[in-house]
Amino acid sequence: MNYDFNTMGALIGLALSIVLIIKKVHPTYSLILGALIGGLVGGGGLVTTVNTMVSGASSMMSSVLRIMTSGILAGTLIKTGAAEKIAETIVTKLGEKRAIIAIAIATMVICAVGVFIDIAVITVAPIAIAIGKKVGLSRPGILLAMIGGGKAGNIISPNPNTIAASEAFGVDLTSMMMENAVPAVFALIAAIVLSSMLAKKGDKIVETTAEAGSKNLPSFMASFIGPLVVIVMLALRPIAGISIDPLVALPVGGIVCAIATGNAKNTVSYMEFGLSKVIGVSVLLIGTGTIAGIIKASALQYDVINIMSAMNLPAFVLAPVSGILMCGAAASTTAGTTIASQTFAGTLTAAGVPTVSAGAMIHAGATVIDSLPHGSFFHATGDSVGMSISERMKLIPYEAMIGLVSTIVAVVWYLI
Image (cartoon, rainbow, N blue to C red; front, top):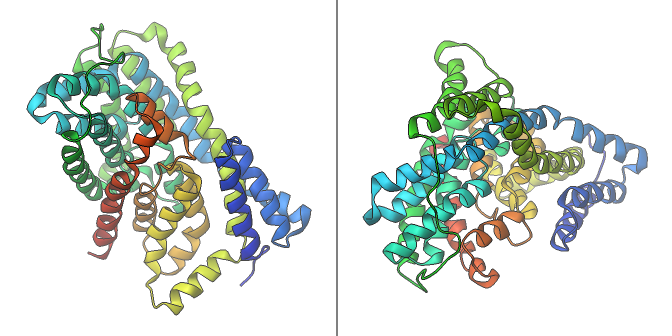
């Protein structure tokens, strides 16, 4: 049992990071400072602490590269109107009577094809608000439908959190995405049931400035061809043994989308827009890597295992629990998944838990309390429908239930 830092230091560093984030210090700097203090308090010394932080940040580089190239797909889907067209088509086809179902599925699909969950919610919001006003749905109901659908799509998407988990466990991205397909379906069902209950309660939407207006959107086929190319390219590995890295597949899908929608000349500007959307999470991952490095090199993981052994809990329980706790600490699915995966991948693998299953359970767990107020997701989604902070707070238990459903199903799916 070799470690450079004690458990108390790791916990103090993590706690300090949380406090700084709550105090509105930039999350990246909060995590870096927390890692530095945690390492020093943990008895590692300045040189060891800094070297461990650099090593932890370096381990994030492959994920950062893939995330940065994913911005090409996300930026193109948003700027061409493809993402909005996909959402609009789903809502239109399912009709007003199935408005909640349509809103949840639309957000799930948009997120699943590679758009970040907060951007997916913001993209669908104008359409959801317009139909909610027409049908007489409440603001909390439609927001929960979008968030729940986004959570379902997030665990089966080529998004930063999935990439981080697949990198930490050394498995291909497609396998990690498909492992949570069944939990995603159950999360979607939970989202529809809970949001349907809320949709008829509270104040109905009577006016808004965010309604969907008439836009010159591309056709559905042109909109979906880009994501389809990505899905096919990533699926070649399990189907035909042909490995195409997400670093290649994601930008190719974005370029195909630009060409198919008749916007090839704007590809460069879409790339720049996409980069602006992923640069924040890329920098966040570097900061996350520093604290993950300290935690991974500390006695924390050994102490956690000892506690679990004393409680006679099976080793696989560590996966969902670590995902839940780390995500709650960072108020970010990406940061939570990354810290938990980087810290406990070796422990879970050594305990005999299959890498894909372990990563999937961590990933699902990271969607339980990822929308706490000290994170940006909480505020971005609330603002998308004009909801006050107090109203937004009331949705957190419902969001947690949706994430918990997918987590429980992921664990059961592993046990089966």
